[in-house]
Image (cartoon, rainbow, N blue to C red; front, side, top):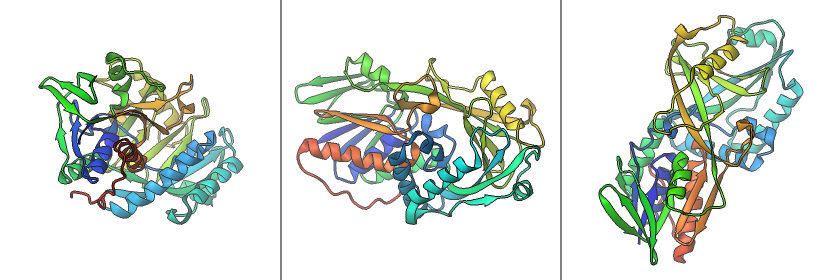
Length: 374
């Protein structure tokens, strides 16, 4: 049985790895370099997503925290804990009580897999650890999550899939997808190939691929651009989760490879997916929000670089922050479309996708124990 996986981001790579460990004959198609698109433009976090609790996405947070624990255990050289401090000011859109409730629930959902329980901090304790402005600072909290080199993780999963027998074809764009009897024909510039099952994990390119090939689906993705700043200097050794007073959005300020990562924005993306970049407006927005809290303000000259990626989110809303970061799997016969998904949960998503494949062929398969190809 030949299986095709379309899309070499973290989710497509994870699915190919899972299927290969179940002894399926898997070919992964990626139009560019695996992991070099959306999967390399994240906030570099392996986390439960504390802000998702505000939208009552408890299942997503619980699953994410479980997967966070698995990655910390199995990839300690790549996935590392990071402390995050959350200051609260007089004009913060969320009160200390609200944040305490959210952090307590975050600890509960993590259960035995929790890295460390959150703690309350005084204003003096925060000032001692962070270069924050003191005016209006009421205190805050500290909790723990994890960081990762997102591109390195994606490449590691790709290499692990190859070691399990998967074939990976990079720089190979799928230009057509059509049914032929009980099979699917995957068309590329090199020609057509027949497969017994197709997993479509094209990420932000999903809508276009389905439309161009007249494949109907109950879901449609909303594309949201997230842009980040990389500063020239290290702001602090711990991370920060800051609240924007004007629009209630939260953003991270994180230590990253000797520098500081600031992000992310959330803007509806309607342009090309080939060369995604931060706009001047997004850069100025993030600098202004950063300067609201930090004693030493920054300007454009303090920004070493910027990067941006497009997130494929399931659902619709005028407010990008309100759209869930969950994923949906839709199988119609021997085609499985994968909508959404975040880096942290790539393994859970892959297992569920493989179960759909097993169900189609009529018998469950047991995957070999996951071994990362170092």
